[in-house]
Image 1 (tube, one colour):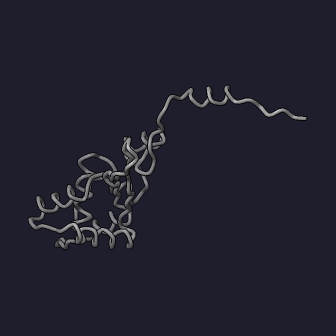
Image 2 (image 1 turned 180 degrees about the vertical axis):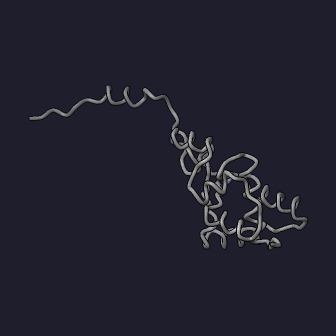
Image 3 (image 1 turned 30 degrees about the horizontal axis):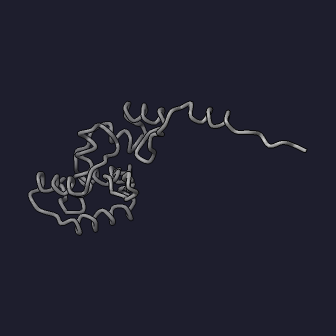
Amino acid sequence: MPKERTPFVDVLIASVRIEVNSKKTWCFSYRLTLINNIFKHCGYVLSTRMYNYYQKQAVEAGLMKVWKQWGRNPDGTIYGKPSNRQITPKGLKYLWKKGFDLPKYLLDWAYHHILPFKEKLLKLAGRGPDRQQRTGEPEALGSILNGMVAPEIV
C-alpha cells in the first residue's frame, strides 16, 4: 500500500520520530525542531504558520495532544518552554492504516494500552507529560505544621 505523504501526515510523523528516538509515547520539543525534522526527512520547508495549522487540525481530530508549558524568570517575566506533544492511540492507528511502519511498543500502546517499561516507571513515580516535579524539601510541610498554633476553644 503506498504511503500518503501530505504536510498533515508529516506533522504527525515528525512527532513520532522524536518519540521513537526517546523511546517514549510523548515528546517535548520546540516547533522549530519539528519543522527542521520535516525538512530533513521530507525535503521541503513548512512555515511555522502552516505547522500550527496542521497541528491544530490534528488536535481537533483527536490524533494528537499538546500540553503548553511555560516558566517564570526570577524577575517575574514568563517565558515559553517546549510543549509536550503526544500522538494519541487514534493517531497511531491512523498512521498505521496509511501504511507507515511504527515500532511495536507504540502499536502495543495504541491497540492494547500497554505502556513501555520506561513509561510505567514514570507513571509509578507520579511524573509524566502533564505533571511537574515538586520543589522544596520533603520535611518543609512538617515544619510548617509544627510552627502553627491551634486556635483556643472557648
